[in-house]
Length: 293
Image (cartoon, rainbow, N blue to C red; front, top):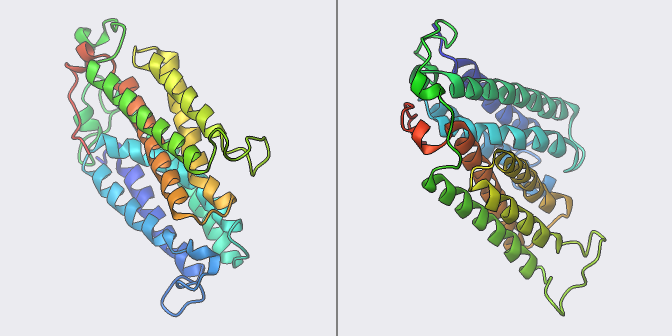
């Protein structure tokens, strides 16, 4: 019987095909109108990068990697926004290309919903190894007896290693945000701090302070803080990813700082989600672990 991950993997492979079709319809092929000609700011070519990345992650998910599944959930959120935005924001495109972009976003929504369902099932499944396996039986095929050791109340707090992970990746995110603000000139005596689009870059300092403040509570195991940190990280992931496009940023250093911030915020979300799923160290020790990505 097909494993619980089979629908996710098949949808991911279908999404890879759609990414390639997106690139072809955008004219990104040898001799095509958008083949490194500057059209669409040379951003249409990234569809092929997305296709390769998506296929690699699909293979890792098919092999039973829980972290890869978590990464794919984050990528689905990104693609859900990126595909519709790039369908219109980069300039006029053929109607076939726009439809394919929107269809890809629809597939990404299915991937997100299905992957979240499997991930939540994994949190409750007594045998996660069989759940995260394409060759294993369906998680609903049987109801094993509850394990009293795993159903007992969780102690407060999170494992020390997890606390360091949350603190470390959040600090990296905060440093990337602060570095962006400093490079943009938001220092005493530098660029004016205003609320207009041209002078609002100082808000990265607020983002950094909020992330660190919430993380300071999350490392102690506060459930609300952990969930809030995931939300903040996802918002920053979207903001860091799309601000350069909306502002038509060309400075390579600014683009690099935004990329670092996007990856750091995604890491914060994935690490925090893993901590929530795994629970405290005493409980985690009795649960079979998935292969790390």
